[in-house]
Length: 279
Ligand code: NAP
Image (cartoon, rainbow, N blue to C red; front, top):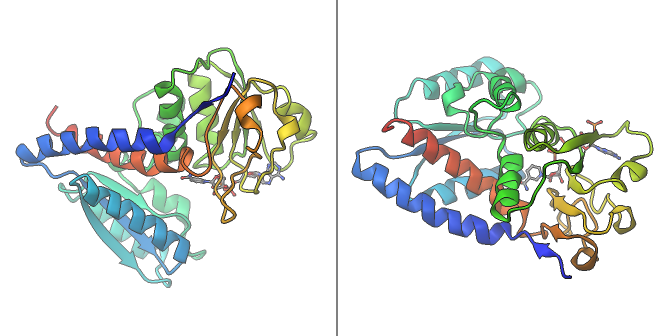
């Protein structure tokens, strides 16, 4: 049987329609959902990501406030900008674009974001709450993956899930979210010994490693669920997806799988944060 394609582009488009409706209801109650984006420095990739996030806000009728700080910004400057947004009643979500210039203590700045406005799920407190199964906006890429899994009604409970990568924004929260869905989770990273044999046991695999086609076709078990979070300029992800139609039971294409869900999850969280004011 051909594999199910986990179509993130389609789900994100569908979700945008739902968000638009919710936003216009909030507008009718005098609330304009607002995302503040902070961009520090001149990294071209970051500029593109932030622009895409701002454009998506506009598309659904949300406001986006752009804070742009120079390459020479200090930790204190950035903390001050974050505090200003924390105390602005009209801001419902704050996105600090990663990475920031190296002189800045990024962790300290992430953790300065008010938990109620941590719609990108980057604070330690948010991560802890999410891991404990308490209310929190999870990190957007893994949270978007979980939304895909739920939308396509994939049963994760009891599966042997292997997450390749342990970054704070992707691998680690992904592992905790899968654990919360009762998967049995293994996290692999750059020091993992015999990674191939671990991946070969996976019923569900998440590629979050940042190396083009790192996971080889022959490492993937027949009928596994295959989630590829990677995206590289050569239009491929972290997994070789070329044979997934007949090897996997379901997989995320690249592009059009995980990527569109990330921004969509960010604006969904911002809308939910604004909605809390009326509920
Ligand atoms: P990252 O911070 O660079 O983390 C990469 C992880 O992979 C690290 O934990 C690292 O292990 C591990 N790793 C590196 N080389 C390895 C190897 N040879 N064997 C096993 N593990 C290895 O990357 P990231 O930010 O999590 O991103 C991962 C991928 O997801 C990238 O392709 C990125 O483009 C993509 N991404 C996509 C979105 C989206 O919206 N679609 C968002 C974020 C990221 P150590 O911890 O031991 O160093």
